[in-house]
Image (spheres, rainbow, N blue to C red):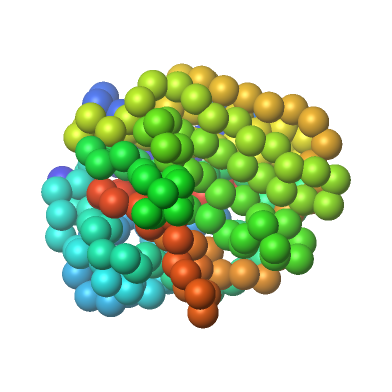
Length: 230
């Protein structure tokens, strides 16, 4: 049975006792932009937010034991989900919160591109900037945003490759990034960054496929991914 989700304000993640509220840095009501439960069994990842941000699966294993219900498995290279570009999947000048649930045991290596891309929109070369959530070589969470005024990265916290489900949240503003792991803030970075807005697709599990390499291939399970704005 799926947990009941009630959103009034802030960002919510699913914990052992149900949905847990995380602080909203702006103190304003949030809007759910995308919500992917990953219960799908075909080639399409359905968006439950009502905004139509459905994704296409490429070499992703469905029906895995999830954080809540079923999950997607990523093991092949490449294996990823691609969601068409949309303006509301860009942070812009809003407070932009990305939450994923990850379960993995194998650490990233140079063979996978030095880290795992859990979710991202845009590359370092993308016009308009980019944002991403990653797993570092050491197995820790990481959030990076790049825009016209600069780039910020917040990474750290505990090592996550223990075969258990972990909730990873990145909170982006035009001048800061916060990383939360399992409901606690573990890292933050402030400075000049600016508004992020690009026309690239959003991808889960790896970089967008280019003619040369996919890179940063995640190896493990991902479930219950959400994006909110405030």
